[in-house]
Image (cartoon, rainbow, N blue to C red; front, side, top):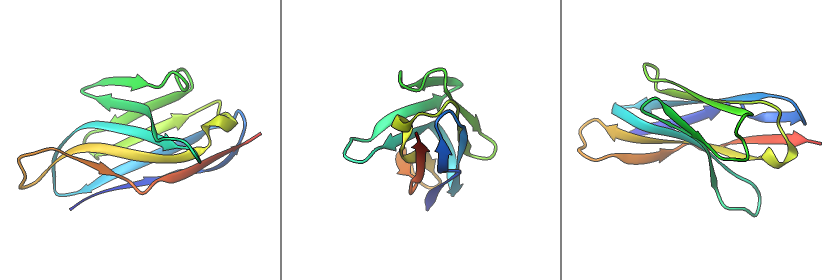
Length: 120
C-alpha cells in the first residue's frame, strides 16, 4: 500500500510564505513525476507545479513565487510558496506517479490535502 501525506498548510497574510511537504511511503520501487495540485472552493483542481527527471514546470499564476523541490532518497516533494496572494487560497494536494513493489504498472496516488488560506 502506498500513501502520500502532506503537511505544512495553514493561515498566512498576503505576502507571506509557507512551505508544504509531502512524503510517499509504502512498498515503492520507483516514483517518476511528483506534483502539487490545488482546488479552491467552486473551482476545478488545477496543476500548480510538477517535477520529473530533474525538470520542473509551473502554472503561470505561480511562476516566480513558488518553487518545487524533491528528495528522491526520501521520496519527498516540497513546495515553497512565497509572496502569497488571497487567490492562492485552496486545498493543496500532493500527487505522485508510483511503481509499487510487486506491480508492473504505474499508479497515480493522491494525498489527503492540506488547507492553505491567505488573508488579505
